[in-house]
Length: 198
Image (cartoon, rainbow, N blue to C red; front, side):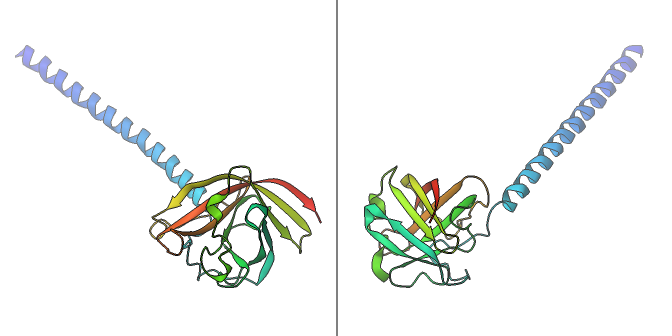
């Protein structure tokens, strides 16, 4: 009988130890979950609202915010914030930052209609220059292409583009892909390399 009692106490102690281990593991995981939720909340607060990359009808804003110049492509056009469907003009997403500001500035242009300014966007190479002239702020922002053709978002309808609202000043040039179709969002990434007063 003494053996059974010792065996029972050992089993009971083993169960208590196992229960404590499970409770401690759950507590540690809840702390990690809290950290992950806070990190996600912080990330979401630093990003813009989602946008439909190729159909920004929900965006609002004024008319011209500056001029876009891409020397290699022979592009020299107006940047508008009220429509993407204008001749010799591209569209600035109001959800993105303004040119030269910390974060991501988003510009959308057509490949095949309304002057087709981005028809040859795919020919840009790393290091090519993209210039934005802001007549209001009297600044010239020069960007350098950092990637082209590596970011084609086939899921842009279900996974909308969001623009960072902080960090290094970057530029995202967007257009449709394949040319003339809205099957994917083709994105060329650039970084700010210089700012000059004009």
